[in-house]
Structures are given as C-alpha cells and as structure tokens.
Image (cartoon, rainbow, N blue to C red; front, side):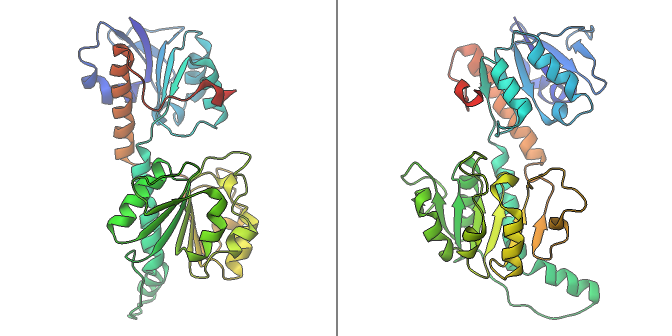
Length: 328
C-alpha cells in the first residue's frame, strides 16, 4: 500500500474516483490549517512520508504551502509527484523534481489559456476598449472592426498551448504558422517553421503569440528588433513567462506605434509592483497570470492524476513524464 498525499480540498473532489484503489492507497490529506490526517479515519499524521503526491493549487496557493513542501521533499520516500502545472522551472518544483523518482506534469490548462488568447484577440480586433469608453461616455458611434477570419497568426512555441490556440483560430477561419524546432505538420497549424525563420515571419503576422518555456536561449527573445519586425496594427501576446519579453523595449515599441497593442498574462516580476509602468500603459492589457485559472483546468488536472494513478499501479508508462536531467 502506497502513502499518497493530497490537499484536503483536492481529496474532496477526487475521492469518488478512487474507488477500487482502497487496498493500494493510504490517502493522507493536509487541510488549510497545515494539519495532516488519514483520509479514511481522520487520525492525525505527525510526520507524513508520502510515496505519491498530487500537487495542486489547493496546496501551493494555500496558507500552508511551506508545510506541504516540507512533507513532500522531507519524507525521503517520494516515488512519484504529479504536478497540476505544466511548467517545471519554479524553484520549489525543481526541488521536488530532484527529490522524486518520477515527476509528471499536466497540460490540460492549455485549453483555458487558448481561450484567453482568443479573448484578447477578439477584444483588440473588435475595439473593446473604445466600445467600453463610448458606453461610459454615452456615445453611439459605430466602429469598423476586424475578424479572426482571414487573420494571420504566428505562434512561437508550438506545444500544447500553441496547438490548442491554433485549433481554435483555424476553426474561426484564421491562418496559423507555428514556430517549433521539430518539423512536420501538427494539429492546429497550417504550417510549421523552424525558430531560425521566426524573424522573417513576424512582418506577415496580425497576431504574434509567444508561449515557449523560459530558458537561457529564450530569455529576452521579444526585444527591440523583434517588435520592429512586427506590423504596426499587429497584436503581441505573451502566455509563456515574463522573462521572455524585454519589457522596456516593448513599451518603447508600443509608444512608437509598432506593434499596435500587447496583451500580457505574465510579467518579469510577479506580483507586479504597483509602480511598474505596465499597469498604466494605454496599449497594454494585463492579467495577473490567471489565464489557466478556470474550473475546467482544475478538473482537467484531476483527470490527468487519476489516469496516471491507474497507469502507475498497472505498470504502464506515465503521461507527461519529465526526464530527471531537466532538474539537474
């Protein structure tokens, strides 16, 4: 029997789906007071040493994340950690990745993130800010707008987020070019180009979305030269990490009229300080890194864990398994 640690709120959601695994799992839950207990009896557990952990926002955004972390990495028996997130570069996740024999991620949040991208594109194309300003002023003035249909999208980093976004754009009649190292057509793109061709593609795009991981190679990739290559009425969006964008270069480019607007769900410093000019720039739409924060994302992460749990006990390959070398 394996000791499996989850947050109490997570357990409340997934408990009905654990039927049939009672003889294989000893479920340990942590509540919002940082107290650990056996889910089956309510008995307090003073020193949890889990072999399986499902790490969700319930724990990592809760009041006792440090307590949860210490149980995860301090038990010394961690065989498999299932993350509800896709990224692995957070220092806490790197620490867990080094402690776990197996580490798996979740990619279902890409569906919510792709809807964020469509929302921002439609708001820009349909003059959302102008319409809202006119409503506030009581002005009845029709505005000519653009459509997704016929628009050209350049999606830099064509993983799960890029593919999910591309499928939606193509369904609405848009044209999608994905930027990816591995070539060959993938779902959600009309064509795939190598990163070496990215700068040549920028002048043709009505929308540019970056969603690559943050690495030394991608840090600051969206810089003055990048923005200078874009169209004056193009929309720039970042769903990756704040460090991908040189933010002073972006604001200078917007001030110069090229590109036309930017939508950012991430920033180089989070939470963003009150005095950061990104807050008030008239050509920037900013959201607080909450593009994946939907009920569907929560359920999707639970689905991934339950599927991998059955794979784990059946001796089958786990989905979204990360190579240990990624945490070196």
